[in-house]
Length: 192
Image (cartoon, rainbow, N blue to C red; front, side):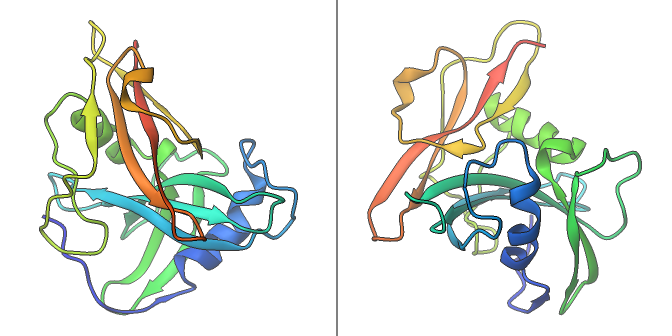
């Protein structure tokens, strides 16, 4: 089970995402430099204990209307062999663990495998900032398609209800800058 360290990261995750996010094809903000705040998320455990897995929601208030983005991340002690260009969000110095390589979870095989396990009911979501504590607010609805499942991430989050998706999907929440809460689909199982 993942242990959440109360320490510093330099640069911070938000500083790294401020540089990385506008370069993504799914970024819809108009500003070259987004104004990001942490708005929610959850974690999954890597069964091997080697990769930290976090599904972070950030809200960009630099756009005309605030936009919520899902950024799944894999935290690694070494570089990910064979990662495609753009997969590396950046490196950061962790106050306890040393240098961490932060990868976009959409390109990290451990992150995707555990997200698939969550969709199949084989993994339990964990609180984002508390060690060894399940997060019952993260729910899975529907069934995984026959023949296994790939995963489709919903990068730009929209408020939605669980019943709007035909296949298995992960529903979780976030908080807008004005303090109101929202829920939407974070990921959907897709046939391979």
